[in-house]
Image 1 (tube, rainbow, N blue to C red):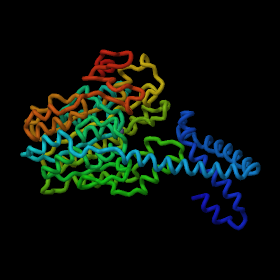
Image 2 (cartoon, helix red, strand yellow):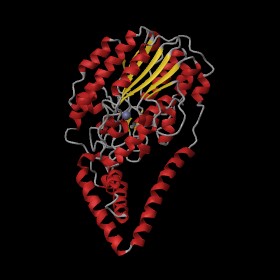
Image 3 (cartoon, helix red, strand yellow):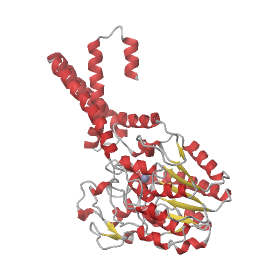
Image 4 (tube, rainbow, N blue to C red):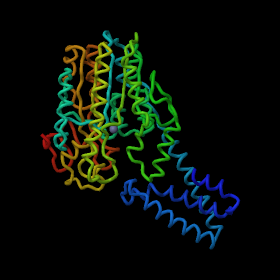
Length: 450
Ligand SMILES: [Zn+2]
């Protein structure tokens, strides 16, 4: 924009050559900045200097080339633009080529049955929300919030973890009721956008399905399969975030999740909760709070304090959400959970470059551990939910209660967790709650934080 403005204002005084050199310099700088940031493990806050330095170096090379050999420079520019365009097209193509399984075996089985009582179902995720003992380990006192849940008859599930330590893989595996962690982001987003086993089953049983997420979850050109989504599809918002990430030189989690309409989203959520509809409701809301560390490749000095600050926002939102459900005076199941750990130990990221002996059970709990508590309309549900060991067991248990049959539990899948396709922490690092990788092999996942 600034460049265009300068162009417009000074077009009379400046030559075409000048614009060519400036344009190529800025384009090349922005194109390489995310890579440079990653190589030197920099956060975007420290990037202004790097940005200027890189721009200076690139400008110097471009200007030198311009005076020595304009032909080489033009050829280089064309190659650069072509590579950028091809890269963009290819990344979209590979995503689209992925086959998406439309009907799962779990759906096939449950579609032959009917739900008798139809309470509203609230699946409320607060990003990176972890259990009280994990908070204690970080030195954070979250007792009041836990007491609030206990006072409201929530059932707590201890020692639960997720099979995917990142948002999309973790949540998509819950909603698809299958191990989808290693699928492409495009496919995970499609599942989360209302094209899942959970959504299909609820819709088939007369539920209206609602999603209150952020543009991050809906990026891509697949169709929304639910009944209501917030924010409404608006590619500009996604593009704005992508562009701001590029300009900052790093795809940081805050940027991906940024949602300027935080209050508006919560207002909409509470309106939906309170609406007295004839149809039962399913609602999945994903709060960006507390959210995990910046995933910058190292821990910032105040990483835990920042998490604690964001936790207060999450706690207030959680209380407001629960109070709204209680005020609706309708039968409801409320699932309160985190989607993965807080990433506050080790490198506060995915332990890239760590030897197996350096990885402890605490590091694994810090990535895969999460919080889970559920409020049921009556105690009948408790007969069916004894086996929740991983977050992805939740809807097997909920459906067992809703359909009043234990047999659905046979469809639950092998719980071998994986972070980002097992690149740094291998697939199967935890099995049945036991650590299978690192220096604490054989220990229970949470044994060292109790
Ligand atoms: Zn998350």
